[in-house]
Length: 294
Image (tube, rainbow, N blue to C red; front, top):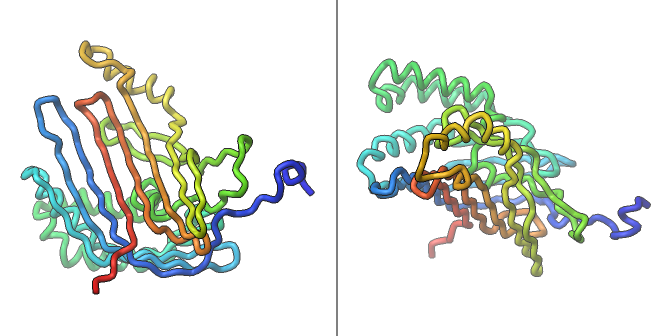
């Protein structure tokens, strides 16, 4: 018996992992605040998703299929960008992922299918989405670069962080000596060119009721001091109205899980990157089991 088990009892996983198939609705709102006199710029999308999970030994296999996506924006300058984003979502509608028993992404299993879908899309739809040849060349280079490092890009994508949480190592009973942190995550800045945030998600709240587990995680920014010295401090040096104390970065996630399977019942993600109250980028996501229409 280990010393920890002797004092605190056996570590029991809070979530059991079993196979399931579920359709979800994912609503995402991106909001950009740019100037005191300017109204917020908002872009909303709503996706219908199918998520399937299989478990083999210590491995988890997930299939995610995009069934439908729609979008809306009140800002006329954002409408071309929205239409372009909806068209790009059609490139790869199916992703197969292998994860370990903690939930960490190990590999994308259908890369050949993703490349085939991309080649078909490039041949048939690229000119209609990017009429200018120079834009086509730039997009192809960027997209194929992303495909070559798809696992890494997936781990930076907030939608997949929400859909595929790395939380299955949570144990009972949590106590004052127990601290849960996800593996390090990275995300590019929406506001500052050349900046990437390195963070981890820390457990801040846990509640159980029957077969439901509620958990909440908040980000811990690991490279804050480094970024302040290299980039952020310079941005405030000539500012009289704003100070570096107003800088903020946070990612917060909340989940209700079905304990017996590990299936998400509903979830939220809230992202904030803020230089000050009039210059900020916000992302709000809500994931819910799709209601069956009678």
